[in-house]
Image 1 (cartoon, rainbow, N blue to C red):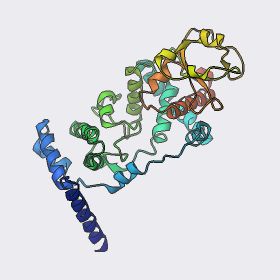
Image 2 (tube, rainbow, N blue to C red):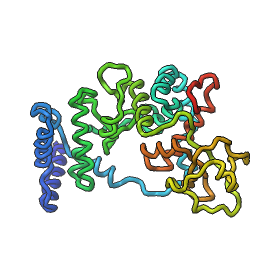
Image 3 (cartoon, rainbow, N blue to C red):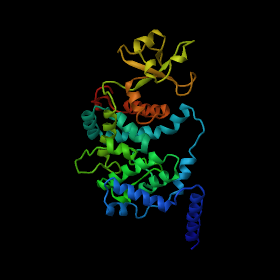
Image 4 (cartoon, rainbow, N blue to C red):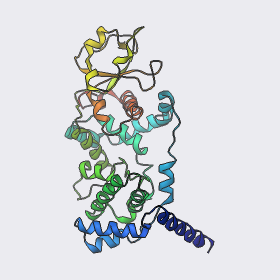
Length: 335
């Protein structure tokens, strides 16, 4: 009884707040979304069922407004995102799924180690996918209003995913912001890149690992991944190096031979590779932290997540996977 009364008080306060702000109530807002969904071509029956148990999720709003703002160093970030146990797990899972990973790698032109590294960084190899009901979470975030257009777009994409039968409504869950499945695709990314690898008619990024791997590879391939290259490497700079040359802007890219002439060397002090690739230099922290020369594939990875910390963690894990597997288990080019 007390729980019911608390719930009633919460929704009453939400209604009062909405009126104060000149907003419709959550219930009225849902009705307007249902009308819009029908106008977009969804049937009345489907829309009624999809929104039948929709609710305002205060925990979604709280998660959005309480995102951590403290500053980590890249070294600290890597130690938390890519601890040794995750490296060992990544190598183990790579070997377990090696056959399908290499088939997918060849089909899409993406080295399998990067597929596994993204899988591990996004969802801890499928273990952390979020438990927020998608329709409620996205409706809540649209109603909250700070990024209404963004979340409405994601909501209608989520309705399409549900309508196409890729996932049952009861299992249609993800993060508070709408990232879904083992690859943590947003609904619009799902519609663009999710892939039905086993041909069962469903693009199941929640429970079908072959679909997960193929979807990750399809994303990377579509946005420009080149399997003949790796991602980059950690480097050392000479004294007095002009740090204004760093950054991901295309205008700051130079060939490896040009970086060599500027005194840049591999982290162990050896010369840079003789292959004449274009590279950018990045300092995720500053000149005292890790410094990388990154190739086009790192730029491609920035389409997935604009954070150089995230990109560095994915590439760091991919290198650890490479080091942890037998040389004869690697068949894709550019490993």
